[in-house]
Amino acid sequence: MVTGFGQTHKSTTSAAFTLEEIVVGVGLLGIMMAALFTALASGFAIVNTARQDLRATQILTQKTEAVRLCTWTELQMLPSTFKDYYKSSGSTNSTSSITYYGTISVTPPTNCTPSVPSAYYSNIDLVTISLVWTNYLGPQQIVHNRSMQTLVAYYGLVNYIYGSVVDK
Image 1: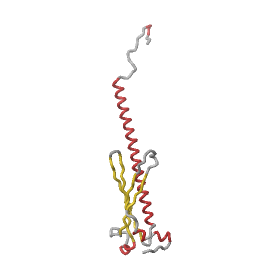
Image 2 (image 1 turned 120 degrees about the horizontal axis):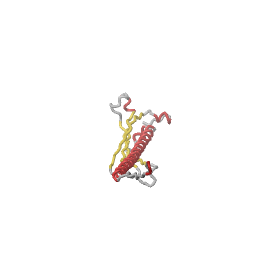
Image 3 (image 1 turned 90 degrees about the horizontal axis):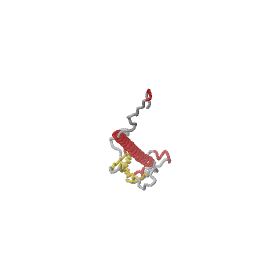
Image 4 (image 1 turned 90 degrees about the vertical axis):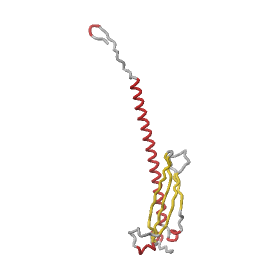
């Protein structure tokens, strides 16, 4: 540097970072990267669980709508268990799929269905469809279950769609 009257002085300050500043900066960067990757992994796990739950809802809706189209005799002969599978289209290299185990139970309604008068109890059935599936989140095993109920009448929806189907 040049100062007044022809005298020169060298600057004694350096522009580099110290070792402590570099270590702290790298440590903060490592913590931020770990947090970012953890957030991404958690997001993907949440999306996967939401897909499985949505698939369970689709299966329950499909089975419930199929039950509503059964005649009274077919309703009494429904299989009590079923299996359904789901393989997400996002997994190209994986052969694993999720298996949904379902049960269908047909029972006469009880006094706990207050919307139905007791005089109609001989002409309706309560159908309960339940699903159970297992989700593995790392080493942790999570068991999920969902169920759906509907009342099916002897003179129900099947008679409106296919005409008078009386088979009692």
